[in-house]
Image (cartoon, rainbow, N blue to C red):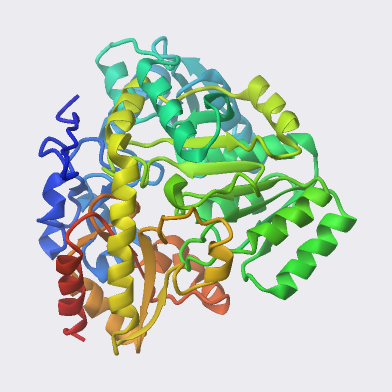
Length: 512
């Protein structure tokens, strides 16, 4: 599989065959690295944007900048192989004034067609590709941006490996394979559940959107509640489409009182939160929230991606636990996947599992499952190492005179974090950094930081980005009003030598 075999030695060194190996010692941080895939794989899930101005130009849709990108995060930027599949589908099915996107099942294609109709009244039709259950949604050119929003926000994508197999004329499977059985067993052991409690998805966002569909089906028309500033697409699918949603970006007593009133006086489909949150790494009082919601029979859906199976145990509190397996569980950054766990301790468990049994469709392509299984064999050990490294780097930065604040579970709402903290684990691998005089100092610091720079997180190699610009470029004033600096730098620490990582941050800070 293109050099994706793994060997884990007793010292936990990564095999040189893995595509992320080179980034541990030779990160993509220079201006001339713009647009290179991170890691060096045709299936990379990130792309190098080494300068602050690169991110600004990307958000401004600068044609020259976009042209330089060889790839991107696959829900936002179509992988070149997937684009090739789209071109083939357009050649086969589209007329002169039409475009198309391809999806991994008829059911997903029908959802896209409904999205086009319900949001913008765009007409469309569905064509069967005839291989690997792919179905093509054909629509007028002016509907492209709307169709792409569905691809991005709902996450039911065709992976680059699925696209490649289809272009090669190779028939594969989504069925439960040896790799998938190993994945389910591994996640079950880490999370403390049975394999039957877990469902796999083609992306973390696909798992989140499935969880939203599940809780909305149980209470049709009821609003959902988002607690804390979440990853941007989860907020969009709750607030822009479907029933009304309430958004409480700040974790405080006033917010808890408002949520209490709502769940006691109105039908609520579910409360969503991250544990901890992105990008401020703050944790809600999960114990108190869970007690309130269970008393009122309201599901709690928790995205634990930043906490990880290794560090946090949310089974006593959450009804549905969602994870982006693209991140820490894989570590390499060359495969997309997600999971849902239904908590056996949830009083709503049977109701939720009944819906999922009826509506769940496994669309994780087996080639992707095989890569994910190989990548995740050393996940437990890697995560502990990342915990240790991130804590050392965080401690260094917290004490640095040019740093205003480090957002990290060790320093933010620590009492709440520890309510779900597994004994003997750590605070995770991610922190966010705000410098003193950040508006003038952050760009120079970021440009000089000698770590790989691009979107995504949870990789074995350290990865940084100006997160607020990437996720909230069109609403910077709003996110600043709820405590998120426009000049925040988010850092996902890897397994490199912590002394070397600290030296790289010290060098960048010395430039400002």
